[in-house]
Length: 351
Image (cartoon, rainbow, N blue to C red):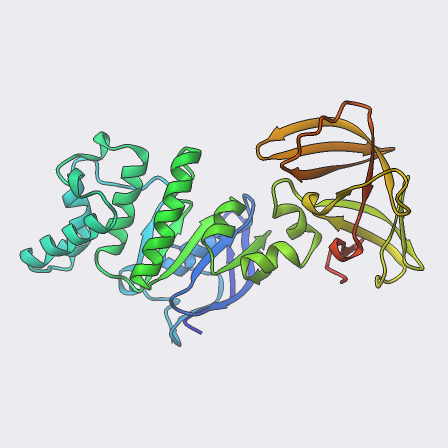
């Protein structure tokens, strides 16, 4: 493995424990996304890898070499911060050139490297401007250019898109994906946005309370979440979950009853993605009756919020021109193959 977090823990002076024995290993050349809610430890993990924070315990290995005590400047890593951290008094050219000047490269080599990187990121025409004259997307590209111009082995990015509007974030995700493909470098990207994780990552590391809860390809994290937390964190809307009892292949939670074969008897949390719930006719043998609460049009999909007693859920239907009125009965089917089962106490995946 190229990069290894070997039992990394981090406790800050005020007693806050940010990481608890983090074990994570991935290959060079991957686009790894550290994903989790606020306080999950993802930024701390990134800063420990960069050398900006020293771990309380454990080791960081890069290509088999222990770099735990190595200063940041000797780790061969570039970093893009959330606020970009550009030098306001320097031009775009000088911001990009700064890492090369620190390394005392020749002037002609600096100029060639700066202009090549600026062309790659499509900011060549802004080289004479100051950061205050740039848009958010332009400033973000300058920060990426400065981090990559000296050809580091690893590029670390701490929520670099969070200050951009939705359309620009979408565009920059595409640019970063292209950049990773062309440079063939290792990217480690920190975010709380699961859409960024799903679209950018070769693999996603989901963190919660300073612990790794799942590490896999994006589609696996989405389709086979390792725990109830991951199931409810990944997806917009989140997975529907119901706490109930399962006996002899039948699940019951209040007024809800459905077949759930292959799951052990006892208390269980059953889950199903909104887009996998089927709207059926009332005569269907396995239909479950709900009532419509709210309908939201999110073109090209329709989100239908429904209730049954104390239980509620969301149904997502694509390209649906039907109108669902408040209080209208709606009969739903939960295909057994689409169901996910989680332990009622630990939240761990059962099937």
